[in-house]
Image (tube, rainbow over all chains, first blue to last red; front, top):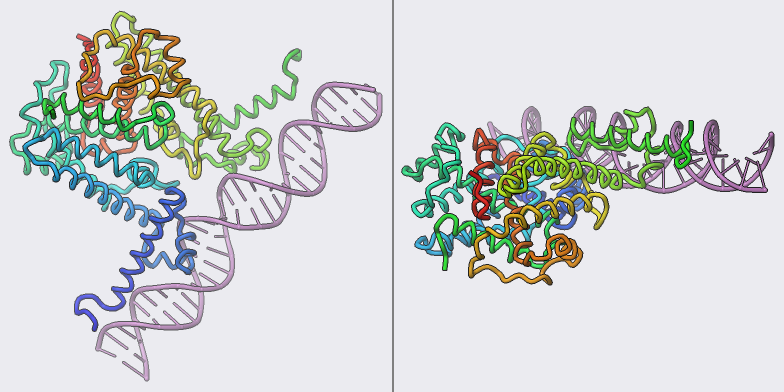
Length: 237
Length: 237
DNA sequence: TCCAATTACTACACGCCGTTTAGAAAGGAC
DNA sequence: GTCCTTTCTAAACGGCGTGTAGTAATTGGA
């Protein structure tokens, strides 16, 4: 009956841990990231708050794990949308990624806040961890999108900074150059700009700054993304 | 000695109110928005927490007031930078606004979080209030920047949505049409896009997503803004 | 000038929170 | 069967926003 590699205790432990995270997600969906309290989770599970410390050393550890899960689900959605479009149309792949991200954010606004905002009172993200891993995946995805469009990107402005590999994080650079050996440093800067451009309207919308002004933010976002794609020379007809 | 219009009590009240806000700002600068607690403010003032309820009905009221002050100071900085550039160079005025905003955000990251993030646990911004007023000022400033550049903006893509005045908030539209009677609705959509574009990299940077990747985010931001200006046809040499 | 009303404040209580500690109970290893 | 580890409870600590009762001071009007 029992598995050779995982003891009964390990299975119970994994199950309880998953239940803690699931309840935390539900609390967040209902009342925002602030509603994630150890006491509320324990209440929902019929336990005491102290019991959770058997699974997560501190509340911030739990939040960090949640950020990793949530970020991963967002990047999964973006990658799936991108991969549903043939690589022969880089512009359409960029658009698919962007719209998937926005769709995910609108469907999971509290998750978006968890990733890109102040997650929870007093929380400060650790240098590494599962959230970092998902962020690297997101960055790599964007680099791939930019790399696919790079041959058509117009020569940069004379006023642009002349980027060098040393301008970027060594680990990040190593990843990128392994996947795209011919990509110049300027493409990395462009990737960051693309990221910012996708993020800006999304963040303003999720935090309620845009919706009071325009009835259909999705149209504005779509136009912005089309302009972005056009500026990369990867026109989609 | 005493003023005819303000009683001694009123003056003391205004002074205490200002002190509460000043201490709240200091606490925020030191420990982030989460450090703004009524008890900490009262401690700093040698009072009890309950006393603050004579000045602000609730903690969220205080936060709302702070958001108004902070947002106003940010917009003041942006407008001053813009006005230091002659109106004959719309592109340079846009760049000045954008760089002033980013400079302010870097100098007051907690203030930026207060305005554009989850300010404080459980806080939800009210529909109107002083924060709204500053946001309207910021929007109007951006509309003015876009309006000045509008004659040079290339015709929109055929894929763009055809915007109508009914797509936007009536009050917002009334303001805009009073100031810029000849501006078409598409310019409002463009203004929102400009806002998003200025906001994106800034938000990613303030929340720590960019800095681990690139050593000089300001160069990336500057390039992005230059590209934005170029896309508006308001090239700055 | 004195009185009544308003205001500013303290003291205390309530229920929430994260976290720690001590101890009980149960599971697995030998 | 014994020992050790893990999981949980119960209780406590300090901190939080908020409400209430009561006190002292200030104010404006008779």
